[in-house]
Image (cartoon, rainbow, N blue to C red; front, top):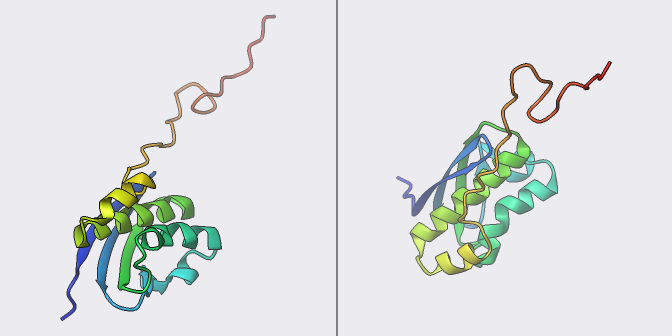
Length: 130
């Protein structure tokens, strides 16, 4: 049986990621696929790895992530948030460095809702004086 060392839930926009840290060699699996396959853009893969790089634990843990909702950007941010929370569970000493880099803060920015009778959240129809 595989033992989870740390479990973290990460959120960003409408994406939610459940993260499981296990002893291993640094392999990251997202939704049953390799990290590079799920996040084809290198920038998103780099965002996911950031908490592991900051705490110098890239090759200490295997990371299993289930993520749903949102797009690639939101999912990458949710994974980063979840990994940071799981690393804090494993070792409380990680909290300071992760907090200073802003990885433990839930990014609360969301898409503003569209208002009725208008074209978008802020956009108004063109005003005609005559």
